[in-house]
Length: 325
Image (cartoon, rainbow, N blue to C red; front, side):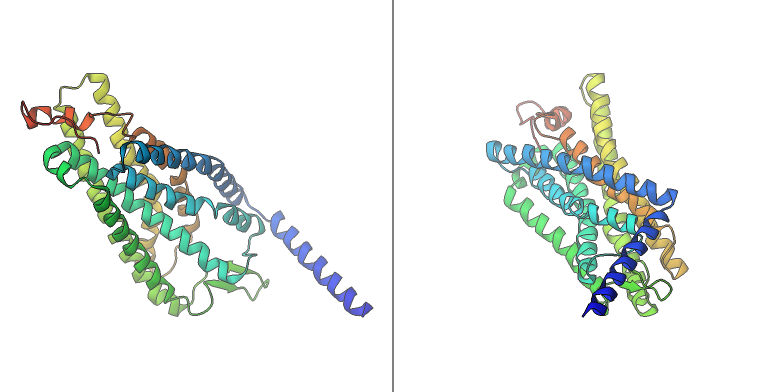
């Protein structure tokens, strides 16, 4: 019995020493990653809770407009990622996956659901604002919370279907890999040839369908809204503010999601997972505090009746001149 206790103690001390050695090997890049994940968590959690409270209050007071529905879904997607950022920070510090293998699968599920769900809902916001500005009368007929909830459900279903296809490559290992060199586990970093055969084409398809296509739609809607602003009768200062808010949505889209999805395209061409994929994920995590800032600027109370003012000349006298998305 005493011998067993000594063995257990030795094993525990060995694990503690190994963890200490891993922490000591943290590089400058790892330290920067840790700072970004910590900074993102500290800003993202209160920011998304604030936006959630603001838009929930608007839904209770003024009804759930499409902008409110999409903003609430965007907040939920961001909070799903924020909740797992401490786990990502722990992985950076320990230089290994220290949690049960099943949690690696759960973590990546929420990670990709948040990433691509945010892409789609940012696009939905941009499309709704463009339609409310360009076609205020027609769009008002279809501006119903029930329809927006249906669109939201369809967007989530599209994301979840792709995630389900990704699970087909998992093969019972929960995307964890144990190194034979130091007997440490990694999460979603090392893949077998069989897993790559499924993951690489799926990543490319997700980059094209869930990022590039939404980005193209968002860019079109952004440029059209800017054109409407420039030809409107708004004061010059108001025009500059509207253009800045509109372009901020597109900038967040490109900066946050561009590098990570580019790694999918490059990886498919190279037939392997690129080495800078982890660094590309850093910009994707920044969306959890950048998007709330954009959504607060897009809040209906901040820009009342803006869409109608932009289209006053097109609508003509005697017709409805206000349409708030």
